[in-house]
Length: 77
Image 1 (cartoon, rainbow, N blue to C red):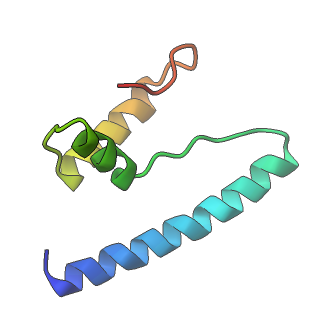
Image 2: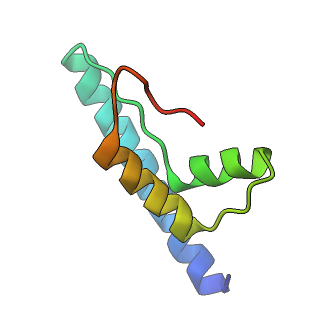
Image 3: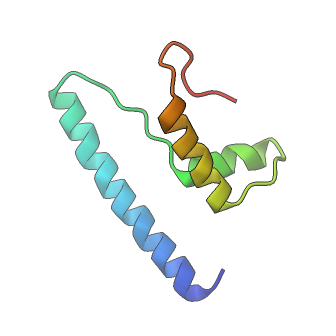
């Protein structure tokens, strides 16, 4: 990864953290919860299990989870 790409990724992470804080505040006001998984979360879980994972593949996995999520099962490996 180039230094420029790292800077863009770091900026995106900061934006995500801000989004999470706002989303958490909103859901607390509405007596709801939201479980948020990031690309980094998927990559970390894959690495923990010695599964090769790219950021693009992790993003694809998150999009698939979003499309096919079953609240009776949750998100699991």
